[in-house]
Image (cartoon, rainbow, N blue to C red):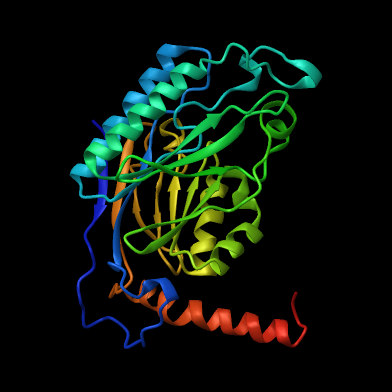
Length: 312
């Protein structure tokens, strides 16, 4: 049983700043709040071992049930939540790449299907990392699957910027951002090393997202600090999901507009959930200023600077 770090939905407070309401176009008619759960779950590294893949899928589904019990509408899992292959433990292929011939693709597909069916049963959206095969000789994709509360795969985000090892030995890159809507809030996706490329996160700001789900497979404190910076720079929420085996370094959690951690899993190497309400009408001072003052002002300042030829 994993522990949950929860923060209740904000209530009206006299400490809230008297800020005017600024809204993105899609906010009209939106529910205006979304309960998000971010998981740190154990990620196996051998795609050829069916028992490990099935155990990983079972852990994901157990945490989905916990998230639903906590009232979450959307639950996020790490990069490679079903499996993130260790290239040094895989058979060698041609030209320095690994060989995928022994990968248990059938088991991976079965676990994806069980996750999809449980999402429909629980009425919860789920975003989780997996690998998707393509027709040879094209290498597989490192992906996030987006499953709706109706159990439908509504989107697949393919990692666009790969690490050197990924690009030369494991995967082929994707090319497009992915944005989907839950209860009227717009959600973007990013994976691990992409945190080092601010242009991707600026693109999501321009696409009017309310939250970016950044799922990683890395034992790196700095990556979490960079994620926090995007909450400050772009004033949207960030879901930061890490493998449980790396939780003691930089645990999973949720960053608010303005850049403050709002909820985090315990800093321990074990499964856990962080759960919080994303509220467009939050009375929290940092969130209110980030959403209603900083984000629109920075948009205006960028537009003026571009018009003046100061920036591209």
